Image (cartoon, rainbow, N blue to C red):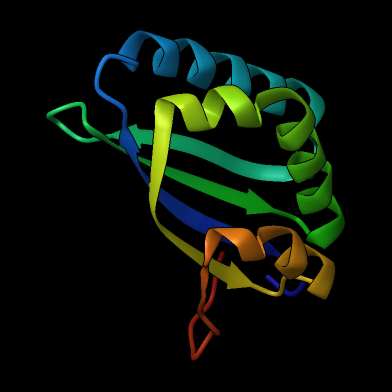
Length: 119
């Protein structure tokens, strides 16, 4: 997965914003699937109590990551952060310095591959 960038973002779903969250999730998933061919995976998971969300995102390279981040900032960030509060952000792969700079405000943890493979 040379050059790939992927992460898991863990977020709290704000009390009273569950309906907004679900509508935003559907909109973002549909938009990303339809318009971002460099996004290889984009999966949202919700805890059984409906209070926590994990988002797994996987990009073919840093350029594809930047396409997503630019759209997120322009179109979704305000509503996203009204409905969700970040808990933890763990990034894997080979993000460029530009990607790292764009995400630095979120205080991510970067993990380096130690061993393994992806089919």
